[in-house]
Length: 279
Image (cartoon, rainbow, N blue to C red; front, side, top):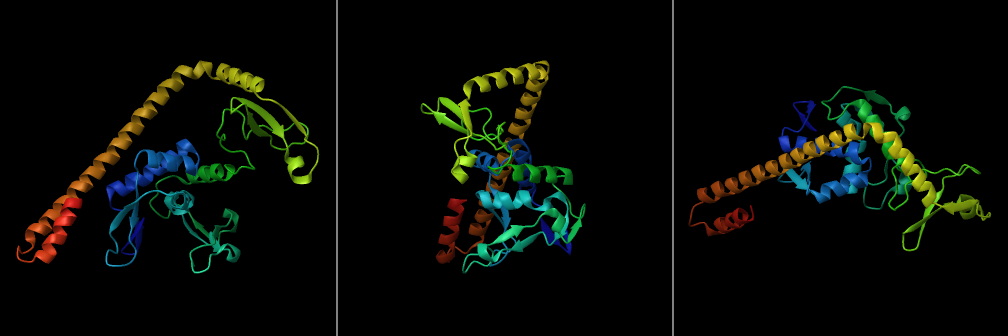
């Protein structure tokens, strides 16, 4: 987003807009910040950043994605078109000495002082934004979220029928076997282990029931997946075409600068030649 003549608008650079839109689409698909980060790294996606100070103020810079920058982007209500005030605060105990920008935390939506929807041009709808926030909050280990790494089908989803605590998946035989264990009381209070059992029979039963439920819609789902893959390939191809177009422009610009310098001024010419070669 950029502020022009007092108004906040989308960045005029088409590639910057396309990358931000792609990030939100991948959040919808992967449902985790880590999943979006791995997707970006795997496909060489870089994030746009407008330089705020120094001699290059206002120029567009491209930087590798990080978990912090993705988290800030996906949690910011501005990208859903909303103006908010009082949604963040600084927690003194989380601040790091000499780094005034650290320690920032987000308040619950009910505590925001101002919320004006449809105030800015948006990349996603407000309903999508709220759905993303619920999913990202649910990804915490102690709550229901995405399935965790491992062979278990029910990791992070199984609730103990005795005490109501969430059960853990423990792997045996170098990861080939799995047991579901309710150990919350044992870990926190030193109580005896609540219960545990072999997980493979339960996983097999759940897999069979899921396949039976999905069987009538299997063909429709397969066609939808094929269509989604085609759209994603088109998006990625567009990203690389835009990067190629930008690289050509940068090289041609340095070429024009090099041609414009006086041949006798080798101090400048050598610098421009190196920039041309790099571009």
